[in-house]
Length: 328
Ligand code: CO
Ligand code: CO
Ligand code: CO
Image 1: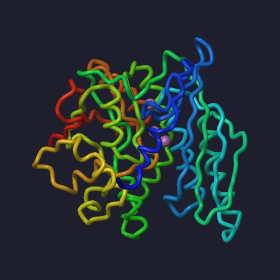
Image 2: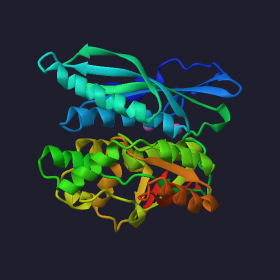
Image 3: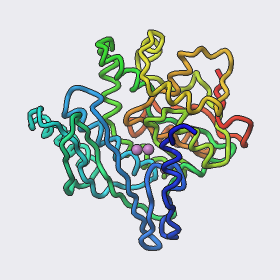
């Protein structure tokens, strides 16, 4: 036997049987949900990571938007946030100040409050938040509710992993970096609000496991298969060209190897186009499953809220041989 995988170790943790825990460790959902009263549930999540951009203020904004997103993906409203930071003693402390300022700015934009936090000394800076939010227990949207016939809507274009790799290699065209940073700092607040208006059945945000990794969680939680139409999937500017040049982050290959058996691709789709669908996203958009007849309404509302890049990218099907299918 080889060394244990992280998934195996996590499976050995004791599971709570407390009926107030509506969403917990036994599903791969975005946040934990705890029912406080019949009409009030607490949503709780934590997320932090190493810098994806050089500017500490922008990094703080991105990390906070990313952490807040797990509350939005569940249909909740962020209430309180705590800073989680790691910082080396060799860097000027003003840099940490800029990271925290960026994070605070996003928390304020979300209408929530930074109520404290914790910093430890570490060789590499890391930053993120633990966020508590609220929702009505019956209005919680998990990744498990997708039904055959639903359409799948993605609210932000893909490609932040590829563009961040290109930024580090100093090969990113300026319009690509600008678009990626603008998107990574954008909250999923409005997308979350309008998906509730449309009565969305299921939702998850697209982050480190890439579009297909998070889609696989949605498919297996819902007992369905998801079908994607490649040409309808929105991409950030320059992504196709950068991927063709091989500017693909290592996480893409981990995601692909992990999922390979569960995805069936149309054989006409070339490897670099497949790679984009496994690209780890930072602070990515929401993937929403909504009844077919509500999809136009949801797209219209998203556009009215400034999310005109949202697209229908596929549909939910009865559970088939593969969890995910990608057509041309
Ligand atoms: Co998430
Ligand atoms: Co997360
Ligand atoms: Co969720």
